[in-house]
Image (tube, rainbow, N blue to C red; front, side, top):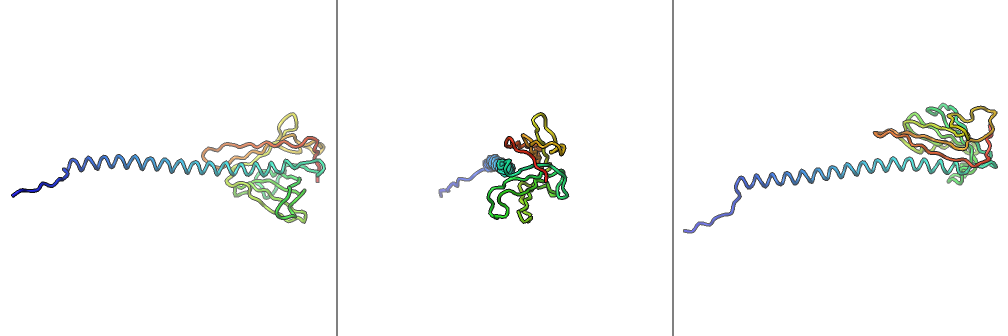
Length: 196
């Protein structure tokens, strides 16, 4: 009688195969984990940059509409809703969806207790609208350049009828790499401050 021989694996061959499979799976899982971590970090960074870009664009739009004809002014003062000082602005807000918030109106830029940067605008009939510009804000501060030096208060004294040449708005976001972001806006020459 002829016996058929079956091809079978030895225990050593099975163990070598499992070891190679384990190395391959470890490499693939490490690669996928690093890819996922990089994607999450990129998404977080993108979100952070976009938040600051939106703040910069919104404020740039406000400061671009300063003019002497509109009796524009800017001042930083304490306010009960603000942590630190608030920046009060009177200027042309352009065209808004709600016509009562279009044109020359008052607004206030401030940091809230729940770590947001808000822009509160008052319509011509004194109705308030609060827009959140950024979340997760640790600090918000303002500086004003008078042509010679930076100062933290504007106006420094009521007799000074001049207008700051530059406004620096500094934002520090909560996060691992806490880095202050400065936005500097120039104001049109010849604009004078008006007190209300």
